Amino acid sequence: MSDRIFPLTIISIVLLILDFYIFNALKDVWQKNHRKGFRTFGILWWGYSLFLIAGVFASIFFNLILAVRAVILVAFFLTAVTKVFFLPFLLADDIRRGIIWIKRKFGKQGTTKLPTTLPQNEEGSLFSEKINRSEFMVKAGLAVAAVPLASLSWGIIEGAYDYQVRRQVLRLPNLPKAFDGIRLGQISDIHSGSFYNRKAVLGGVEMLLAEKPDFIFFTGDLVNNIASEMRDYQDIFSKVKAPLGVFSVLGNHDYGDYYFGRQPSAAKANNLATIKKIHGLMGYDLLMNENRRLKVDGEEIAILGVENWGAGRFVRHGRLDLAVQGTDDAAVKLLLSHDPSHWRAQVLNRPDIDVMFSGHTHGMQFGVRTKEWQWSPVEYIYKEWAGLYQEKQQQLYVNVGYGFLGYPGRVGILPEITIFELKRA
Image (cartoon, rainbow, N blue to C red; front, side):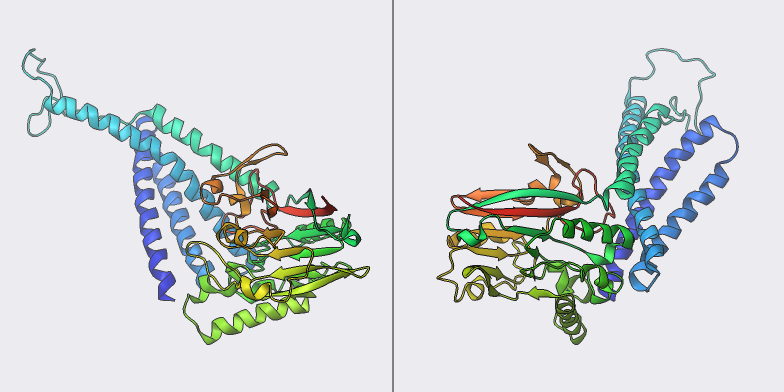
């Protein structure tokens, strides 16, 4: 518990300092133009800020109703982002005021006799008048801050559940004839703990099923932290079925590290065991560093799945060496591995693995994505972050996710359902 209280307390203090700074800037401009009303504004300002901070603590440490928790966290996120965008304009204005103050304080004095009516302070300074804030800078800051507020709000209202079916042909030189033209579906990063609209989530599942894929991959992050997040959505994702099966792996969030901590504990182990059980109850074949043979008309390909393996700070439970055991004779090997950084770190050293399927990045839930071009800030973190990549004969596909995490919406990078058609090269 204390591991979460301390960082939240520090964040809250920083935000309160930011609130105080912005509040005083608005106060200066308000009192310059209005004689009354600021007291009421102040009560609303601080009441709202303190309510949000208390609400975030309550959302994390108490079992609030999902709808209430979602409203609080969304309001907190949008408010914080708006203030951060407003901040540079206030800082620029303070720099301007500081320069004026320095010029007045240390500029040449006495070369011209000044009128006796010039304002003076208690020490008799000739330049004691208040340097007012620039009303233009404050209004410009408010206008600029309104842009992310509007776009992020739109991303919540329209983007969070705006599922997009993306179609991709995978050309494989060694693909058996029986698999030529077969259809594979992929979803990733469900993050059920973030959902607040069952009807919309069900609509996305129905879109996937309407494509009639022959088999389906789910590439990890079923929950944000704990198994109970699936309580209201297990029945929906149990509808995900395909004639040749549904295969799944775990993602970094499924291990409970962000809730229980990195150290082993009985509660953490029980949570992971429950998540594994949920995969089975939904009819998903969970691959834990192992493989399956997929048979069609007497011909086979190998489906491999590893536990999460991520570069940097992410957990590394994946064992590629175990997953490939017994597959030397397979004409084609398809690998499920949640984190795309695994591809460059290890998978490219195994040229017998034809295609790896990942998720994890979410495309940062923000950016631009068209058929010809895509961009997101996440590309400065992950070289492979969305869509199809190829080096020599090996391919990687990164699905930008079905759900969302943190920011409860998407701007430009919309939730994805991928439908592949396997073709002989």
